[in-house]
Image (tube, rainbow, N blue to C red; front, top):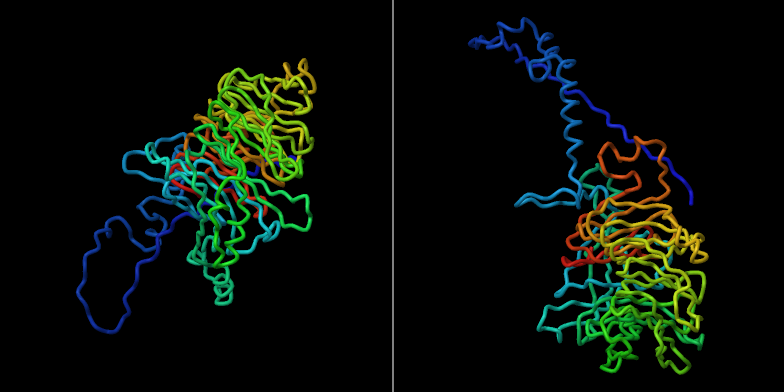
Length: 487
């Protein structure tokens, strides 16, 4: 990946100057004389100007102000590190965002996925629109209120900065075309239990004349895996008046091979008819394939090798039969799905704590990122994992311990092999640029703030954030979900 030098910011200070006192006009009318309390200190207005705003010369005052500014910089509030005092809250600096919206649902949706659409790739026009699916987590005793939400978010306008700039009338007219009130449309599919994890995938049917089908795989708290065809719901958003039949809300498959609940699920990007991997708390991984006729058939024999729960699974973006899994046993394992032994080809201990999440780079396919329960995340070069002997000696090519709480989500940028999005239990969603190169020891801290690596691009405060995903068709757009809703 390309290397970029750390950019140093320069702060230009403008000294404050005292203005001259106003001189009343001489209109020939004699007025009373007010005693000047500073008469015994200054003999002329020139001396007042030299003394500055607080009675001291500028050359004496400015160094002190500079020292105060430095002290203030050293106390920069860092979300996830510093604690808010009682009654305090954080407000985002909207000048740093191109797009910022939030959405609250009846029940928290702690897992979601962005659905690809036909609105174009690399689109930058506003207002923006996107499609997503999410599963709810209703409180105990209200399981019958859980649902799979199919959503269309439209009218997502960019941040209005006109109040900070003097725009011309023509610029304002252009901005009005890009401004809109956000609109949320939803279609509900009832679920019998809380959603642990949900993932969506669009597949082209074997009959090429038919439109693409969008499937969702939902891992429920009761250990069932439900597969839904949400194509009718997605289509209805653009066809007002379309009725969704009860049959179209039922799952096309209900899989019951797991005996315990799980959180790991991933669709294969390379198997055209549809293939799914799911992992559970017993450490078992099952593969499910869509056969001819649209029947979903799980492999009765699981992949085994983990000593504890399987927390995440990722198919290789370039090799049809290869996948990786992360576990609370502290290891990441790489598997060949064709193996008759159903055992891992390589196993690497990447953490002394639970490995919660992994992400396989779509651009540089020998890079795999992992996030652990101790807040550390790392990047691994899979070329060092070619066999178990090499893998046992492998070291990460990058590692960061900025976060002090568990990593809950990690994802590579869809088109830039150096950019990462991280969600953590310290209520932050952070963006990172691994291409930033350290020139010397002094640059290990960003802008003079101790403990902040220069690769850290951005910190967004988000209450109890659980997952984050890049939108593959809107450059730079990240969506997150937590107990406070979507942002």
